Length: 167
Image (cartoon, rainbow, N blue to C red; front, side, top):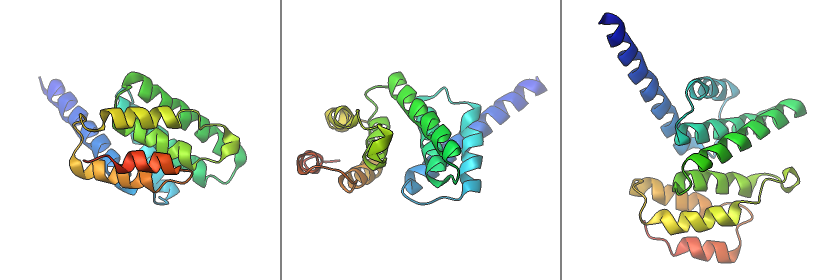
């Protein structure tokens, strides 16, 4: 009986830790976070990444580690892992606008020579199609729209499409 309690307690603690990290990353995705903080996020999110959101944010952390890495091999390793995890998350939950938003943002910002831009238009279309019906809080929808509209390489047409959305 006592073992069951500890299992439930530590499982709940882990869940809230993951949620806390994801919420922090949602707010700070554009900031340069310390390598130490990103490594801790990576460690925690790697433990249980069966959930599409956790898997996507594991990919986000890997992209952020890649961006800040000094050595080219480390940069490329984390870039590939981030790409794989974000794409796998979308396969698990295709209509999820948060996942589409994340990939759109990263594909808009990643240098062209890395060749990870092929899903931008599809992600934008699915984001727009599911935006109104999504259960995501209004404040976060506003934040996503703001960030998407300010992303580099955004065409006037894409900006106009995003500008017509009302959270």
